[in-house]
Length: 86
Image (cartoon, rainbow, N blue to C red; front, top):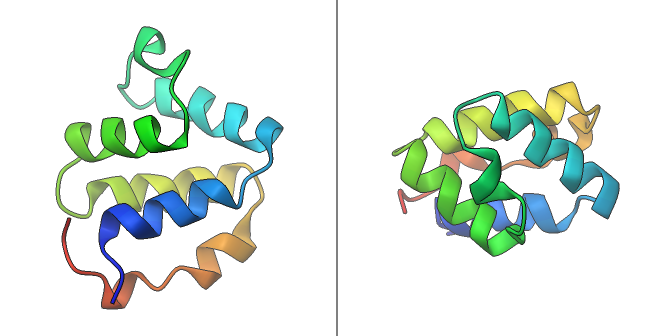
C-alpha cells in the first residue's frame, strides 16, 4: 500500500518538465511561497505540499491542479482511497 508521500511523488514524476513548472505555478496561487518553489525538485515539492497541507489536503490540492493542467489521466489513476497517511 502506497503512502501519501509516495503517491504524490509518483504523480509528479509522471509530469513533463513543462507540466511540472505549471504545477508549481499553481502551487504559488495556493499559499506556497515562490522562493520555496523556485529551485524545488519533485521531492522537495512533495515535502512542501505535505508540510503546508497536512493529512489529505496535499492530495486534494494535487488533484485540483492536475485538473487545471489537463492531466485527468493522472487524477483517474490515483489510488488515493487506499493510501496510508504519510
